[in-house]
Image (tube, rainbow over the protein chains, first blue to last red):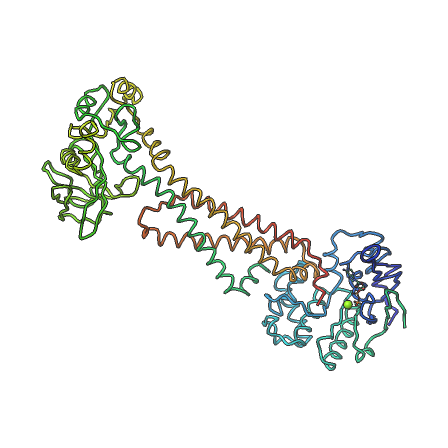
Length: 230
Length: 377
Ligand SMILES: Nc1ncnc2c1ncn2[C@@H]1O[C@H](COP(=O)(O)OP(=O)(O)O)[C@@H](O)[C@H]1O
Ligand SMILES: [Mg+2]
């Protein structure tokens, strides 16, 4: 599947926290390309820099050095080249968090629709798309429920619907199946694969979950901030 | 999609409770403002009641309210003969403790000459004093009813009419009696004290003296000229109505006014801090959600809108609840509570400013929050 256009292009990215005695090199000279339609897993022991790399790709953390190009647009090259990073995230990137992080005061449907509202969709179109997505993820029967009333699996599917709502081409997920049992985890991964293929998106997933390793096109290992493709 | 309203609806019970608490605080603030205004209005009631233009009092005094003033009764004739004076009347004032219906009743007794200025303004029940002795017109707050009698000094007076809003600067309700009755009452009160004064060689209060003579000028007459003329008389001083009101407010009720004023200032500061704290806490509790919003791409204006709208809704509800509550209870206060639309609007302005300032603090914290914090578990 590594034949589509390159959606994520990370070149020579380094990231360190602190200076001197307390300096931690979370990423060292990382190169990573992810193509459209590709679903990859980011593996590595705790503290190896997986979340840091995801945050760099998601434009919520500035690298210390290197270049980041997303969907053909170079967004970081020694410094941010775009000022409205949030708009960039809104349009191009979908996040699926470790915990679902749904807004507690919105219903499942509203949690999905809010992204479209921010992206400037009309209320009716936003609601329709949110409803469709929830139906697709088989949680439409919970559309009117607040997150507190959703089961772990339902909440996670709503979160996935939110991540996909604005049709981003880059989907970043940090341990999306950690809260799910292995059967559900497999279902969620199958679903993500399907969506990636349909929307010509790529998915980068941090995971420890060996049971779902076979669902990835590629496993990328991080150790002490360095990449070791396997 | 209005996030502020959705969030409020989500935690409606708590939000309403907070608004109600704030509303109670605003009730206290508004009642304090009302009490402050009431104090000033009450103080002025006694000066404004006779609708005078000029007060002729004892020379060297700022009587009869700020200082004791004694002038001969004959002054009234002299004043009324002055050019430009339409009518004049002598009055005197005394505080007495009467007993009524088994309880003691503090009364502010105003003696005036029927047919001359200084009497009760508008009788709301019964009639004014006729020419006869031992009749009185009482303020409704005395609790006296028309037809009842009450003993003042040695004599029993019949209540013939009722008025409203007549009291002295201390809030004691007033009763009106004729000047001759009042002067008789003055001489028979507390004989022991009089003997002491007489022993000291003080001017006998038995000499027919009154506290002040009030004058209304003819249309077009010059009040300044009149007061200047009166001041040339050896034993007399003259104050215009405006000066008399100014004295009342700046000297007679000044301490009480400042006391309440300072308390009001403290209360306002406390309220400001409370409002700020509520809004700031409300924002702090939402930081993780704000980080999530930032992560999914919400612009600053969405986040600022969420915080500021909630702050304003809170402030407005608090103000509204406070206003409704004070309007409901204000007539149950023993003294007058006077709320001017101006005060109410000013409080709204203050609350608005505090809400904006407090949400500014919240917004600052929200702007600083790193979207990455939404990712942490
Ligand atoms: N904000 C930060 N400040 C300082 N050190 C950090 C910060 N974020 C991550 N680190 C450090 O960077 C290293 C990599 O962290 P992280 O990317 O979270 O690892 P992983 O997700 O693989 O467990 C760790 O040593 C961690 O302590
Ligand atoms: Mg991590």
